[in-house]
Amino acid sequence: MPQLLEIAAGPVRLDDARRGTTRSVDLQSYRIGAFPVTTAEYTVRAHGHFDGDSNSNSNSNSALPDADELPVAGVRWIDAITWCNAASIAAGFEPAYALDEGTVTWRLHAAGFRLPTEAEWVRACRAGTDGARYGELDQIAWSAADEITGPQPVGRKNPNAFGLHDTLGNVWEWCWDRLDPARYGDYRVLKGGGWADPEWSCRAGVRRGDAPDARLEDTGFRIAQGAPGPEGQGWSEAEDRRRAATPGPRPVGWTPLASA
Image (cartoon, rainbow, N blue to C red; front, top):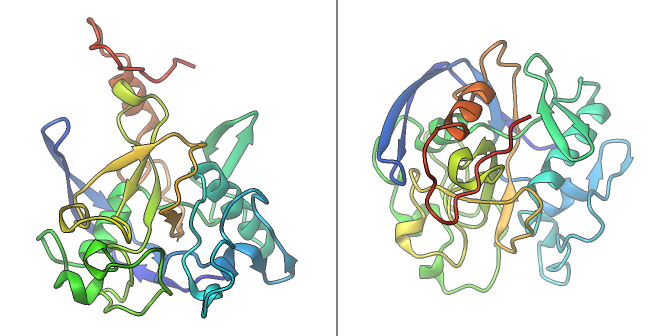
């Protein structure tokens, strides 16, 4: 299983340039992966094999040296959710997610593996810093500046002060949160930037998103663990529904989250 690091309770600031908002979130302690989930971890678990989604391109780099150390890429958000549940069962934890005909519900009390919330991801990435990055880009992240054509083995660039590697660059990482339920329905947040992205994309505050079933060649995930209790570590289903239900005319292209 991926190596998990303990992140102490504390505040984190979240900026949303798209909406022009800033908010502060107080997080409980939690654990998060020191690295993005690798190809080897995605396909093999402690007692047998777990292939995840057999149609993913997670093994597309299998002919390359250190292929098992590459971050898994081309993984849909729903694939990451399914993997977290399977890994939780294998490790003896209650799965964090309930899946019902395409609907995913987070069991907040469950101790299983899960995707980090955006707030958890940002706190872990910043590691006590407040700038765009926790170090010089070429020292901490694989990006377009490296002139590479795909993901690189995890852990080859410098970690941040919390010991996390590759939070910026290499592959974008799925988070649990919706990007903006008023504009983009169930689209989920992506963080961190990827190997082909320019410097401005590889910043802790940058937000990108896509549909839960979208397969993006530069996208993987990192896992978290820790039952947050009645609050969702900076995320709230009720707040998402409130945002999506904002009255008044909607600009062309807005597709609010369906009421349910």
